Image (cartoon, rainbow, N blue to C red; front, side):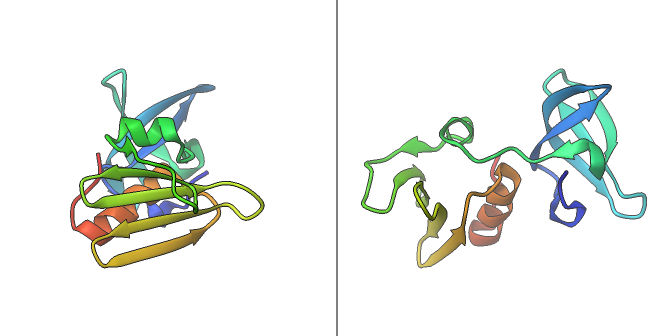
Length: 130
């Protein structure tokens, strides 16, 4: 389940309907009713409660879908770039994620989810990542 307060229009999530889970994009968030409208890849819009929405772990596959390119591995982990924005995923005993854009760097303990990357990206660049 995703924390409802983290969701924003454009975020990519997993939505569950009748035991079927599909990836989709958040179109609208209704804070009063605590529901989220999601457009699935089947081009169908549906409203979901937060209990039926799940995060997608940030992986190399997800970064490629978001148009990041694999860069040379540095000593801290594998780097992925999209323009001036860099994501470094490190594995091992203490996995962490490093986000870098121009003069701002964010170190995040552990792994993050796709919607969290999208929200950090928007906060750092003022553009939504889709």
